[in-house]
Length: 114
Image 1 (tube, rainbow, N blue to C red):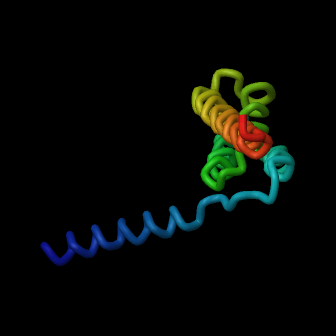
Image 2 (cartoon, helix red, strand yellow):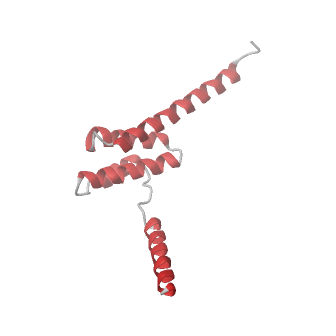
Image 3 (cartoon, rainbow, N blue to C red):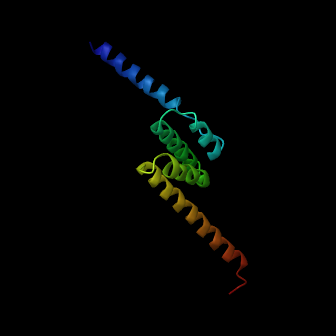
């Protein structure tokens, strides 16, 4: 009995790892992801795929692509998507932080002893 239970747990873990490893890979660009989503049958499939792609871009610090995809979901696929809206906000905040850091860097670079 215990042996069967252990085997079942191991099988479930292996299936979970296999499923996680077979997830959608990040497309080369947000445009490529949008193009690929056009072939999907349902609005939910499109939204889920594009949000997953946006998260992948966000996690790899490609915030412009993440913003593009999240904005596309909100404006053209599912205007009620809380996930897309939250990701859009996070990615915009990261872009703003990057811009602020760049401005500070430029100020330091061009301040002539003042």
